[in-house]
Image (spheres, rainbow, N blue to C red):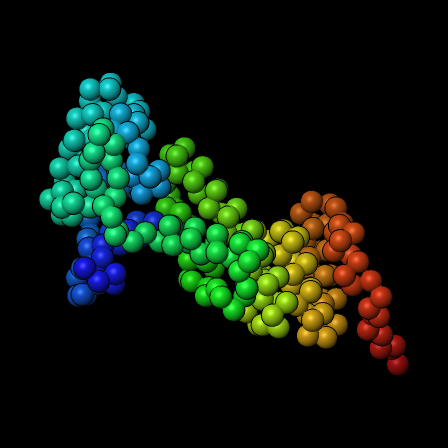
Length: 246
């Protein structure tokens, strides 16, 4: 099977299961929520034990009922996507070759975070810049994984913006920095990168403007000033003279 035709599970910005990409109707719609939760759980947790899956997905019912619900969800899934989830030695796992956007995001992040990786060696996927894990899902196992991915993306965007700045790719560096700011508006490390990009381009007035904007936001939201690390970036830059009144 060609990689482009492999099944794909999408978890960022909502759940989607696409069996292949050969036609406009290849996406599977109207999967019961219990089946979606099963696929998401197996996707995010690797090869969980059946007992653990049943207990986490149906925690409010007796163990026997939880296992019955798991068997029902597996049967429903097999009807629409046979072989997508495999059972072996009491564990469940996605079939080999299934593409997952969350895994692609993690793989991209680890490549960027590798100190040996240069900016020219990294393409920025859409998943790198945006996408929340399963919005509207509030189970504990989702909340923990959502926060883990959020932090991974933020740190990766910081590192990527720094590498792009050093490579002279200032527009892309700015895009990466603002993607981090969009996800966390008070993230100082990302605002510092914005200032550094402006300085690298010799846009001194823009650097001051970015600093002042962040400083005002921080004062309004937290009542604290920027760190010395942030302030030192703009020290020595002369402030524009105000025009005197007539």
